[in-house]
Amino acid sequence: MSSPLVMPSHLEELIAVLRCLPGVGPKSAQRMAYHLLQRDRAGALHLAQALELAVNTIRHCSKCNNFSEHEVCGLCASLKRDAGLLCVVEMPADLLMLEQTQCYRGLYFVLMGRLSPLDGIGAKELHLERLVKRVQEHPCEVILATNFTVEGDATAHYLATLLQSQDVKVSRIARGLPVGGELEQVDSGTLAQAMLERREVIA
Image (cartoon, rainbow, N blue to C red):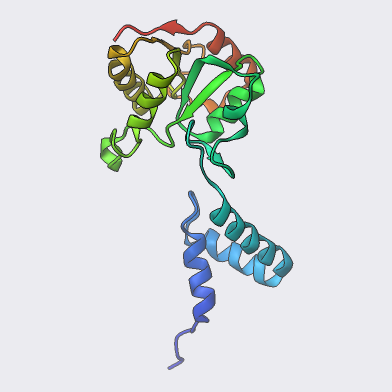
């Protein structure tokens, strides 16, 4: 009777670590590991160094909560941005999409997620007290640019209610976007139009 195949422990660990990436299952992780070790060891070392550098140097901007290498990111520090506009998005990818439209010159707040009770993500996990503090410091129009999904709509409704007591106008980007669609998947022209046609939210 032949003995079972024994995989090197470090290889097992590499495959297990790669599985932490979204959408990567056991087979995909195995293929990635084999590719890096067999075809691109230099790339593997570069990847490891880049990950270590990113983890050690990237933090959250103290104002907008986006990823930044500094206490305050470049967008928040820019004097060319309109401080009277604050756009709330779910993820950094959504911020990048809005920037590509070149139709918005205000500031941002990145939630780093959306309300999803089934996934254990509530208001506490999104650190909404930081958003409220930001609004209190700089009264402005708050534009809710969460995705048009069930969770995104629920998040927008919750935020509109939360900000009702603050002296701010709350608006929501227009529904030129497909229902169930996510901002990072939408073309810049459609997204720009949705931003321009935003409507005030009455909580």
